[in-house]
Amino acid sequence: MANSSVDADRDEQQEDALGAPALLTIEALSERYDESDERWLDQVVDLVDRLREDVGGLERRREPASGQKGGVDALILALGSAGAFEAAVAVFRAWLARDRTRRLRLVVTDGERHRHTVEITGDTIDSRTFHDVAEVMARRLPMR
Image (cartoon, rainbow, N blue to C red; front, top):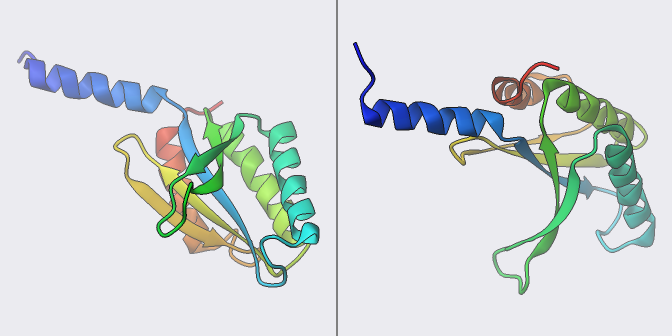
């Protein structure tokens, strides 16, 4: 049975979506520090530096935020392989372990533009909550 043009278009879109890097938006949060506290900003810079060194593909984007003019800076990590995702998890784990009041909000945008959000702490990085995001990433990323 031959594929219809609709089926062929859908298959091509799925291949394009799977070939593109998965986007992981990262927001660093703290229960201890105000978001503008210089000590907190130094800690976030440390996270950014580690991700750039160990994973690569990190960029800052201005994202619209409800109720705010001009939006907020977002850290976007383009992950092209499962190995890159594993490297990012190692960075997250180390960064969160240094201060139990830190949290990371991760938003995975999949090929169909669905967004999957999870917040992780040093206590939850290995839990079922994080497992859901890891499964989404594993489906999107080639093994390397």
